[in-house]
Image (cartoon, rainbow, N blue to C red; front, side, top):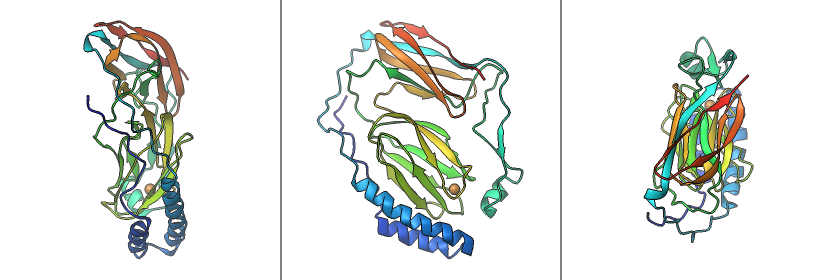
Length: 281
Ligand SMILES: [Cu+2]
C-alpha cells in the first residue's frame, strides 16, 4: 500500500474562468435566468474564497499495515419493515430542458427496493472502531453527474481527501452547492454541457448534502469516510464490506429520507459476519 497524501481541497479552474463560462451560458438564457446567474457569480467568488481557506490534511500520515489473514467480511441487507411511503413527486416547471426530460414530473428521495423488505440508496459504513488506523486515499476520482436535471448518482460514497468530479451533461445551467458541517462548503456553476469541476472534502462526514440552487428538486448526498469500508445499496438492498480488520465496530446505514440506523458488530479473522440493518416508517 503506497503512501498517498490526501490532497488539498482544490478546483482546477480559476474563478475567472468559471465566470467566463457562466457569461457564455447567460447569452442563451432568459432575463429571469440571468438574475439567477448573477447570484451564482457571487457564489463562485465565495466558493473560491472558501477553497483557499481549506486546511491541508496531514500529509505525513502513513497507512497502517494490514494483515490480510486477520481480516473478515461484513455482508447483509439494508431492510425496510412496514409499508413503504409513496414517492415524493415534484413538478418540473422552471426550465425547458428539465421539463423535456421529465414532462410528468419526477420522484425524489424515493423509498425503493426490488422487494417489499429491501432498501436501495442506503449508504452503509463502519461508523466507529477504525479510529486507530490510517488508510491511503485512492487515486481514482468519484464522479457525480448532473444529467436530465437530476444528480447521478444521488447517494455516493467518497473518501476524505479523494477527488470528486462534478459534471454537467445537460444543455442548461446547473450549479453545485455542497454544505458539509465539518469541511469548507463549496458553491459553483457548471454553465454548459461538458463543464466539469473537481473538489475534495477534507474531513469525514455522513451525509454531506449537495444541491443545485437553480433547480430546487436536484439533491444528492455524499457519504465521506476515512477508510474503504462503505457501500451504497442497489435495488436488492445488499452490501458487502470485505477485508475488514478483525475487531468490534459500529456499522451504520443512512438513507436520504429515512435517516440513520446503526448496530454493534464483531468481525472475526477469516470469517463473514452477516448482519441486516433495518429501517421502519
Ligand atoms: Cu440544476
